[in-house]
Amino acid sequence: MAKKVIPSLKPSSNKITDATTFGSFIKYKRTQAKMSIEEAASLCNINYRTYEKIEKGDDGAKLSTALYVAHMFGLKLEMDE
Image (cartoon, rainbow, N blue to C red; front, top):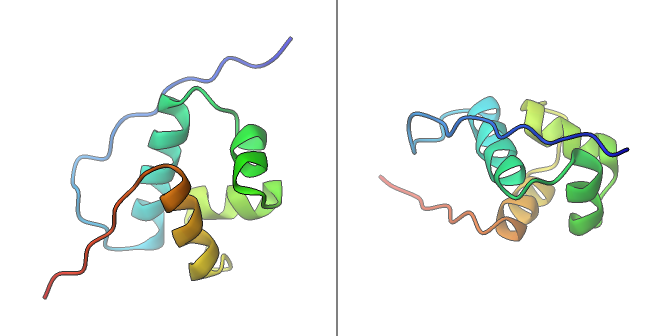
């Protein structure tokens, strides 16, 4: 039997100040879609461990991959001065 996906809480701020906050937005979007990490990694065509690093805010994940995952979940990133 598949694990039940428990929705995570939406981050309290829309400001992304570090990789951990970025990862919490990714996790929020994944859990809202009721997807497991394995399903999300497959959707994004990336390795499970790479996806897991992005959600945990690990500095070892490539920026281009993290941005691609955000795009796959419909997150829009904006730059502000």
